[in-house]
Image (cartoon, rainbow, N blue to C red):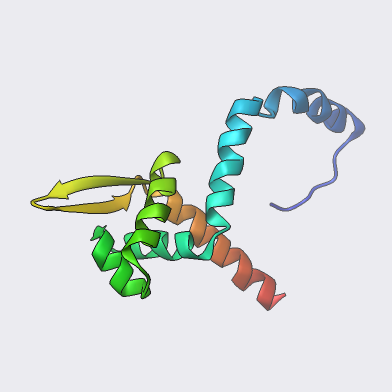
Length: 119
């Protein structure tokens, strides 16, 4: 976002609108919890893997060279936050991202990093 000069009147109007525009604490808490989930490298790797294709716990564990129990634990946390969902395929359960918003966040984060490197 490009900053622009505000007139005093525009600034005062924005200031008056500020309190109304900040989400309620419950919504903010949900947002914070999602960012906490993104603060763990294993969960980020899982999300990036699931952005390519639905995967079972075993497939994720093999891809990331981790134990199935640790992957299951991380998937449980991601499910609680509604970041991933699961679908049964025969005897296996495959996980996938709940929606594309998650990848949009990651894409914008990557763009931000690249932009900062070029400045």
